[in-house]
Image 1 (spheres, one colour):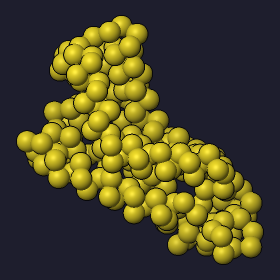
Image 2 (cartoon, rainbow, N blue to C red; image 1 turned 30 degrees about the vertical axis):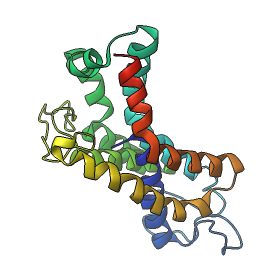
Image 3 (tube, rainbow, N blue to C red; image 1 turned 45 degrees about the vertical axis):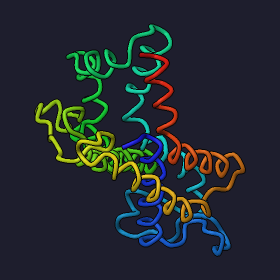
Amino acid sequence: MNTQSHAILNLFLLRKTLEKKFGKMGAPSTPDPGIRNSTSFNSRIPLQEGRDDRLNEVIVAGSIFPDVPMLFFFIWYTWVVPTSQRTIWGTLYFTEGWQTVFNLFHSVPIFLTLAGVAYWLSRPRLFIFCLAGLLHFMEDFFVHQEDGHAHFFPLSNYKFISPISYWDSRSFGNYFSIAEPLVILACSFYVFRYLKTWWGKTLLVLINGFSFSGHIFWYFVFTHFH
């Protein structure tokens, strides 16, 4: 699943979940922004009124963080050390060193441990960050084949090989590439009301534009950096 799609989908899922549990969380119809009324859960994760001003950024950061090494990997071998895309994704991607890095950043045990520590120490932003990362893993789990990650690393190197690929047309990728931007667009209508800045709203629009035209970008990359 594309990195930007994780960010929008997780904004929708976590905002919707937290709104159901704590209230409107700064929706336009709410007089004061913030998550209201502590409960037994909130005694450890004190998301209180007026303290969710950076919640969008935390969710987005947690959603894209697992893919940061891969973005660096792609930029480095495409533009800094020019290498053919076939070699990048067919050989270098599967080398032991890079696989270890990717697996560490997609590790369920590591993120669960961090979430537990954040919960125990009452660090709400770190807790939400970890939840966003864990959602990222769940979303990836069923749409990757050999290019997937060992999500239980370092406890296990097991890698689930899904019958569905988010990009490979031989494994329903052509259908997924249509469904993904439509789902993200639908989520964006909900997310839009929580964005308080013009640049946040502009970025949301640009992400949706890229979701529908991303194949053009990848066509350019694979034809000009082959």
